[in-house]
Amino acid sequence: MKKRILLPILSLMLVFTMVFGAMAITLEDVNEFLNNSAKLGEGSKANPIAIIPINHIDGPHEEDLFYAFVSFKYQARGYIKYQVNFISCTCRSADVNYWTTAYVDLTLPESGLLDDAQVRTLSFDADGTGRYTGGFWGDSNPIPSGQTFEMIKEQYVPYYIDKTFGELKGLSTIDDIDLADYQKGEGREALTLDTWTGATVSTNNILRMLHAIFKHHGTDAHFANDPSIEKLAAPAPVEEGVKETAAVTTSGELAPLPAPVDETKTFLKNKDDKEESPCTPGDFGPTCSAINNTNLLEYLNRSDVFYIDTRDHNDYMKKHLRNFEVIPFFGLIYNKDAHTDASLPQLYGGTPQEPVPVYKESDELLKALFPQDKVLFIMCQSGGRVGMLMNILKARGWDMSKVYNVGGMAQYTGAEYRDLIVDTPEMLMEITYSFEGLTRIAP
Image (tube, rainbow, N blue to C red):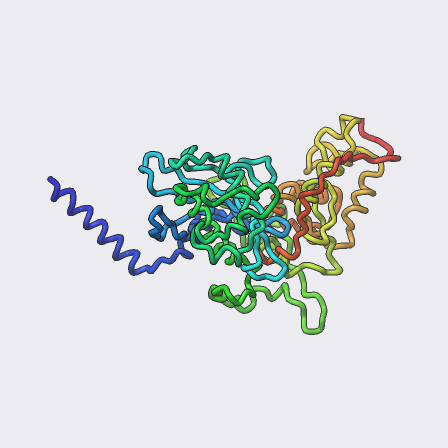
């Protein structure tokens, strides 16, 4: 009976060895598959994920090449947020060997050198804002040698804050930490590294996790010119003619723009449809747009284009593309009840396809906000409200061959847009939207 079971298992193992051996799958292949197959990563609503190597160390200081999981990566202003899942101790049995989740903020230094990147935040519970539980302590509390999670949070973890990769990469274990350096900082004079005797597996692997996430941090485009980092292969050259219409002509004139709707694309016109339909000029959603996060770079800074962001001011202040003017769609332009509720300030009520002007001056203001003599590049958070606005503009007489839905801010996560993004999360605004001196004509 055992032989019958064993033979199929051996056969299956042989098949896997033959297939994966022939394919020569790398960790980069796996990470690309994880992000692309689940529609995660650059240009998606969800954040990039990755599997990264980590040199796990046990009590006797024997190393094993293990793996950690980066379940969250998001670039803020001047730093990147990460969640890293890793095994902190392999000395426990599998039934209680929970994975630890570290929340880590690592800076993007002006030098562009990974050695200068610093630990901005390190936490096993709250994230850097304190509003989200970004981490999880997977070890026991207290750990077998008696140290509690609170002790680790209050005494050990703060040592790493503001440390650079250059300072940490030479430390293999906590035995390499200089006591005087460990005691730097207000209230740390009496702390001792001897506290962690017997707790070295968990504490050493916090250090090893930082090594691993710093190295992953170095794969970010911010460090592309760091000579100490092994560079990835250069991207394949763009096929001739792909960006032909986006280029500037040799005479210095702006090249012609494509039609707003790419009729070579298809989409699900209704959510219950089983087959996709071709995009047509009246399809204003971001899926059918000829200009989006894949090619907007080629169409920026044109004198013939008016760039507009239709989110409210608070979302705009959190993150926006430079030179996009904010005109809040739901704050000022449209509310389905605006024509029946006098307390609402918007210019139009009704439906986007059949908008009802609320004021005598509604169309005049719409023309001032969305000039008819300009090409309009309009964005929001995901592209949906732009589609609604385009229906309103069409209904009020705009030439729709000059109006583009360039998608949503959520899609502009690629490194190529990083220098064009303004991110000011520290600023909060209290906004009241209103118009004064207008003549209401709606009931």
